[in-house]
Length: 194
Image 1: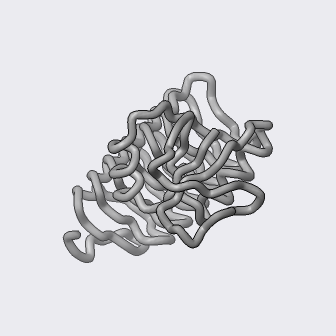
Image 2: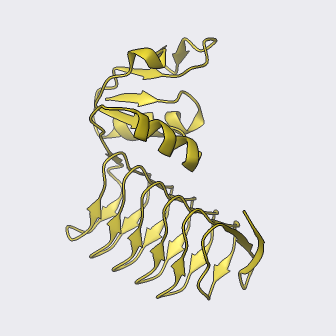
């Protein structure tokens, strides 16, 4: 497996791949000052090959890079994850330590399902979403493309969150959230358009 992006997010993905016994060949990064990350060589993006994971936390940058490449993408699911056999996880997605993915969940491409996150039955998480550590999606929640849900947030059953929105850390989402907004709080309220 190869990784594109040599920073903190890559270190966690390396831990997942090591735990799963997956060989890591090298990383790619455009920062010419980087030559190694942990024990792995960092090469320039002009040399990109696959199978590949885009190891960049920013949803917009991850999308831009993934859509610019014509390589095969892998996925990384830590061995501690509880994963229903009825769940579907797209290419390029990473599910970190302690995650729970329940029955009939659909997770799109190039998502980050971060440490200790719980995604309950029949949720749909579209492409390029980041669910931060210890996020809880109750049943039948729909999260639009590119949305970032902050650490420790809770989304009650049946809620829809629009594309490319941000839900602040520790929020409790009890009403639908439209696309392209910043929403925070308990109870979560829209603060501004983004």
